[in-house]
Length: 113
Image: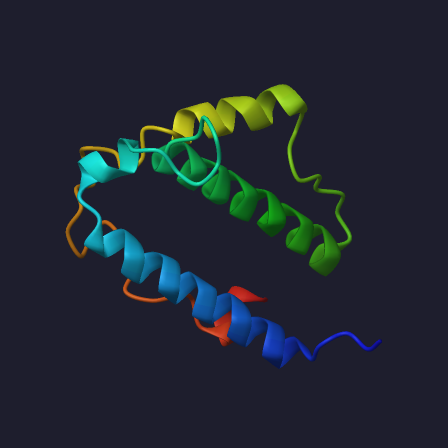
C-alpha cells in the first residue's frame, strides 16, 4: 500500500482544521465545559489535548526539517502541565470573537515548512 501524496494529506489536515474551527465558532463557551464523547473528558479538556498534540507534532516536524533532535514533549510531566495549562481555553483575555480563532487553517505553503 502506498502512502498518500503530501498534497492530499495537507488537504485532509486543512479540511479537518476548518471543520473544527467552524464547529468551535458555533459553541458558546459554557458548552465547552460539557461532556465530550470521551468518558470523563469535557470538550474543553479535549481541545487542550488537541492543542498540546499539535504543538508536539510541530516539534517533530522541526526535528525532521532541521535534524536537530526535538522530541514531542520535554517529558511526560511537561506534557501533563501543557494539557492542564491549556484546559481553561479559551482564555478570557482572548475572548471568543473573530480574533480568538483563526478564520481558516494555515495554507499548505506555510504550514509544512
